[in-house]
Image 1 (spheres, protein in one colour):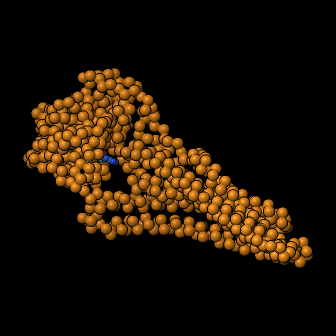
Image 2 (spheres, rainbow, N blue to C red):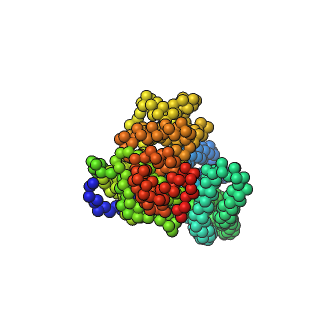
Image 3 (cartoon, helix red, strand yellow):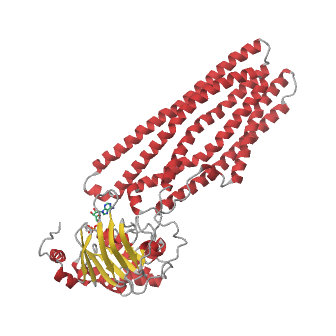
Length: 592
Ligand SMILES: Nc1ncnc2c1ncn2[C@@H]1O[C@H](COP(=O)(O)OP(=O)(O)OP(=O)(O)O)[C@@H](O)[C@H]1O
């Protein structure tokens, strides 16, 4: 066997965090067009009160109103068209960013280590790509609207200064008080949105978990219990949302109040100035129109800050997920793929320990064993002995806390993850199928596509050819929803998948649990076929499988008790004898 290299592998780097400025710069042309159109819309809106002033002047001077009216209509139409086009461009930029964010977060989540995904929960992770991504998408619109609204307000104020600086000073004083109030409210909104999104994640997680366990819930009549727990989550979400709604409701109230104060102050001051002869009626009318025109921009500024805070809170939640390291090593892409050492065992465990997150007791405790390059190896032992955990370590779904694992003569850490898994086929306890066609499910894990003949041979080997033929679209039937397979059929489908991969190491976790007598016989034939060229490792409870194995590893409480062939273990290993006796109904198992 090759000497074990000293390997130090850092955790994989996370993908880049979501940075709004960088995201906005991805579509510069579209963004520039949106900005330009928005400026046109603002300028058109600014022209309207000036045109009103001109029309009032024309009216007093008995001049024709037609040119002024025509100009006004043209400014209104151009402004409206520019506003609509700008909004659409912004929406496209926003949707583009949401798409990138969703795909990045989903791709990252799929590459996280299994224990991390389990600890987080599927529903909670799903909430990040649904509700958080949506909140973040609206930030683009807001990020553009805020400077434009600020530009609109400033440009309007400049024209207002030109008309009457005293009235403008009164307006600015009223608006400043309003802005301070709104900023105070929106600052508190960000923390509230984080709390609300956390609560959305919790409810999504619990609901998903309950749907996945729906058969058990129904069978145990546990619907009321599930209702109660879900109601608690919904109540938490309601309470945190109410706090947000309270803050949100304060913003329009503050806006209305501020606008009304500004209007009253301007009317009083304007009346006094007109009485003193410092202001004309036409100027005052134009000023009032400008004041009214600032209202939507000020509203946009105030509500935009709130939406921005919500988007930033969602960004922080997505970034928190993106910061979690992936399971692959950083240099996986460039690392050379090791060549299997001739004659080296398929798998070697040397003093391997592993403790599942959150549990105090190691599931594997200094376990050492070796699995030959070909043949059938059965891993046996009482429930909770650590058999499935050992398989997870071989597939590098988890990494050892101590000790080392070698695959085909090389430390497992030297294998790029993709190359390592390409050498293995793994059939888990749930015989999972993807929501995809039977054809795609069969070819999962295979490097090239298989022809119909090869697929048919694999299906015949596992006794599934007729069942697949009976599906409405044969191999092209999408499995998982209305057309599903029975537990035993799924199990055989997973075996057919293992057959088609041509892997060096085939890991089978309790593969016969749902097979009838005939199919168990078939299973043995398939395993014999596989074991001629591969190392087949079976976590087995059935004596029939164990007796048949070339090599048996007996485990208990995370340790390897003994390893040899079946007759040798029967002769020298008392716990193994007890296990076999229990299988044949002779004596109960007494390990603990
Ligand atoms: N995802 C997990 N999180 C926490 N603890 C776990 C997890 N999976 C297994 N364990 C614990 O690790 C120990 C070994 O479990 P493992 O599934 O490896 O045993 P096993 O021998 O395969 O059992 P069985 O024959 O019942 O499937 C058990 O004590 C179990 O409770």
